[in-house]
Image (tube, rainbow, N blue to C red):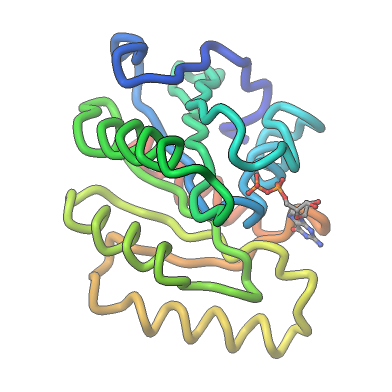
Length: 196
Ligand code: GDP
């Protein structure tokens, strides 16, 4: 369980605040309200490591958590909240883009999407752009407990089919923080990045 006993390390608000690389980093991104904080807390086996349902549009921070094996979990601010002022949106984009583009210690991205509304235009933009960096990306289709078994399976197939042209570095699975399902599969994929 690679995320167990993760410890908060630092928050940054500006690219200039990025700490020097001190271990491989796995970043988590997703639309605001997609379920990212809940997924991080579920993987970490921790009720509130990442803050759930924070007011969107508030100061946007990147939070770093240290894992047992020395790697870092990097929680990126949620994107796509419509009511965010333009300046906040621009600052957010600068922070995320700088991090995802320039960070040499970043080894992979976990992208969280609500399984009921996957692949919004902003998600597609993020996925296509990140795939171009040549690093692996693992998509968690979360809140799968809100779909019937059949609908969840159909969504998984459909999203996989839509992302297949991006090649084998992009992988997709179902996840539920409520039911704690999909945890082992996510650990296997991310553990593979850390050990690869
Ligand atoms: P974030 O903005 O992406 O960090 O999203 P949060 O983790 O704060 O979750 C947004 C809302 O979705 C909250 O009300 C959560 O309780 C709910 N939620 C998150 N994950 C799940 C899940 O797997 N199942 C269900 N049913 N609700 C979830």
